[in-house]
Image (cartoon, rainbow, N blue to C red; front, top):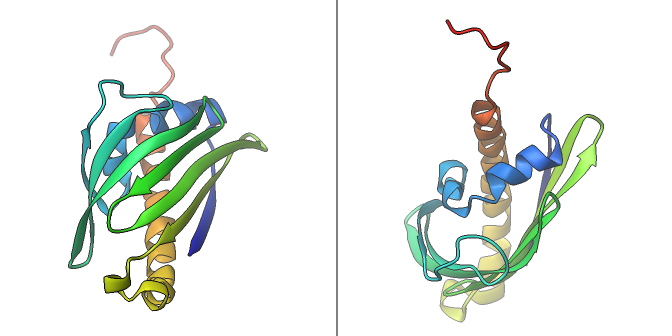
Length: 154
C-alpha cells in the first residue's frame, strides 16, 4: 500500500528541516505517534533508530524505525519494522517563497490485520490522518517561528 500526501508551508525548506530533524518533536504533530524512545545513541542522521508507540483508534503497536536517508533541508527516509512494515520519506523542496512538503509511505500489513484487504480499508483512513498530521505540522512550524526582534526589550 502506498500513501502520498503533500502540503505547502510558508517557511523555507531550512526552517521546515530545522523543526523536522528533531525526531522527538514528531509526537507534537503526528496524532498517531504516542511516544518516541530512541534505541540508538545518536538522535539524528542515517542509522538513528527508535521505537514509536503508535495508536490508530483502538489499534496500538510499536513501530521500530531506522533513518535510512538524511539530506539536510531536503529529505529524511525511514524503514519500518513491526506489525506494519515498509519504508517512507519526507521530502522538502522550495516552492515560491516557502516549501512543498511530501510524505510518502509504502507499507505492508500482516495477515492477521487482513493483509491486502486490511490495506484497502486502512488506506483512506491513513491518508486522512496524515493530511491532518501535516496541518498540525504547519501549526507547529508557525508556533516555532520567533518574531523578529528590533533589539528593544519590552
